[in-house]
Image (cartoon, rainbow, N blue to C red; front, side, top):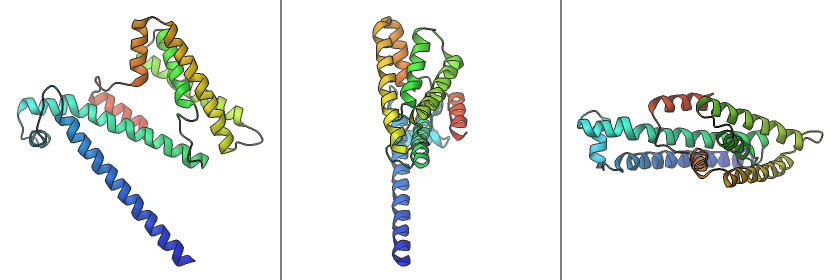
Amino acid sequence: MTAVTARLRRAERRRIALVVAGGLALVAALTVVALSLGAAALTPAEVWSALTGTGSRIATYVVWDVRMPRATAAVVVGAALGLAGAVFQVVLRNPLASPDVLGVTASAGAVGVFAVLTLTVSGLTLTGFVVIGGVASAALIGALAWRRGIHAMRLVLVGVGVSALASAVTGYLLTVSDLRDVSVAFTWLVGNLSGAAWPVVGSTGIVGLL
């Protein structure tokens, strides 16, 4: 039995290593594509020369100052989202658990849309509203799911209900508000990498590590 268990563990480690290696290779390939495509199209050779410091000034500027911050921000945000889902699944011991399933993401989005459309806030103030909304929704979900302890499946079911309610609130706010304000709120809700710069990438990475 011990030999079988050891063999299964080795196979699991090999599978994890292959998945991680494949994911990193895919991220690297997509990053090269992202650095190449755009109004100023670059070949992979031009991208490589810009990355190594031997390219032209224009190619270096396009790669390092325009496209690399966006690509890096996409990788950092994607890693943070994946880490959040993994943490939820490990803590709750439920493969269905994730911030969006439990309603935390939808609740934070509803608070953010409300702040943008009703209070017309932005920047760090908006970030504060979203963080407070996410924490408050997590506490509410935990309180609603508490019955002499928190069962993982009950927490998921309560989270799905809260997520549906928050999504309905978001949809209502987007429906009754002015179209110009809605476009701003929708852009914030969906996300946009066009304004990504190295300071934004650095702050996002620090928050993700914390």
